[in-house]
Amino acid sequence: MSQTTQMSNPKQQQAASPVELAQTLAAQLAITPNDWHRLKNNRKAQAKQQIASALVFLLKDQPQEALEHLNQAVGWLDHSISALPCPDHNQVRSQKSEVRS
Image 1 (cartoon, rainbow, N blue to C red):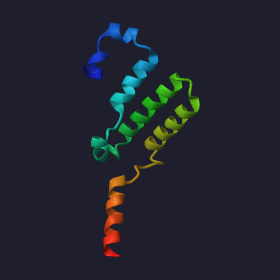
Image 2: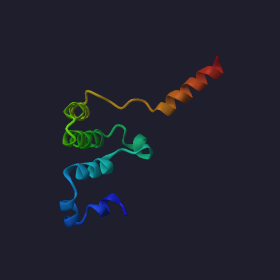
Image 3: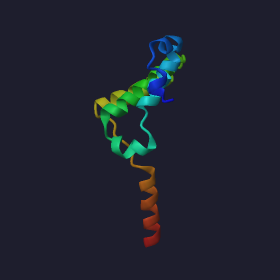
Image 4: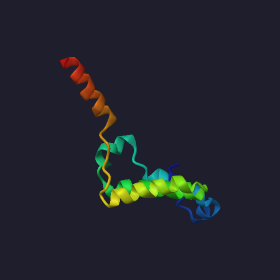
């Protein structure tokens, strides 16, 4: 059963703890490796992912980790941060330069 289906019933939502609900939300908003290239520069998607993670940490009484994720979300929204290059691309560049040497 998908996470969306698991939490769609109001009775199930009431039975779930706030941490479980936040974890479900974080899982739904997480950018998967398959979607990374498509969403790496999508500031709203990146911010949503970070805010959901912050909520999980806050509910688990880890305020410092929550703050770090909130700061990342703010950075995405105010354009002060950008996506890092794909690690796979860096490996390809290194291999090409080694072959040329």
